[in-house]
Length: 99
Image (spheres, rainbow, N blue to C red):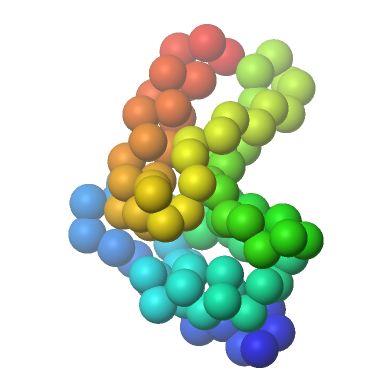
């Protein structure tokens, strides 16, 4: 499986307007199982990061004063896609107050 074979973007209940989230739980499982090293964007700054060794974690990318920052949200499968989205929304709210 390649990244080009991933399904297209979808809106998920509870996501803020304008957020086009592209990942599903099944897609996350397939990416991890296939060992596709790299970062896959879910939308709104949330990424699934898969390392060369196959370990996966959730990353929230944001900017403060024009500088890009990455915040670790936890490893997968301990942190589910739904939980990662919740954590990213909380972090997004906090970072909006700092910028």
